[in-house]
Amino acid sequence: DLHYILKGIKNPNPEKGNVLVSKKDELIIGMIVDDLYDVIYIDKNLLVPAPSMVREANNELIKESCVYNNITIGILNIEKLLEEKKLY
Picture 1 (tube, rainbow, N blue to C red):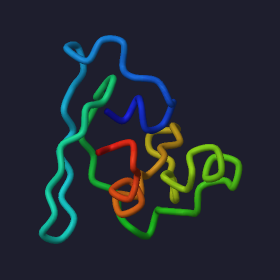
Picture 2: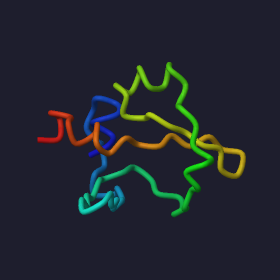
Picture 3: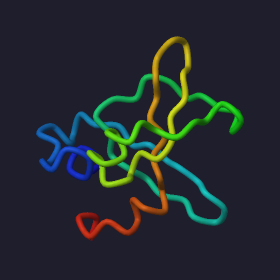
Picture 4: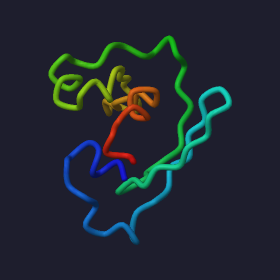
C-alpha cells in the first residue's frame, strides 16, 4: 500500500485502488496505488535528481524526477522501498 508508505496512513479505500506492477532485473512486485492515469516509458536521460525537500519528506523513496507533458513525476526508488519495514 503506497499510500501508507508515502503518507503514513492506510489507504481508506483499498478496494478502489489499482495495482501497479514493476519489474527491476529479476524482481517483480505489485503495489496498491490510489490512482493510475497512464503507463509511460521514460528515457533515462530525462531523469534528474528529485528536489532535496521531496527526497527528505519521502525518506529518499523518491530519488529522481522528470517532466512529462508539463507535469513533474517523481520516480520511486524500488530498492529503498523494499527496505521499508512498513511493508512487512
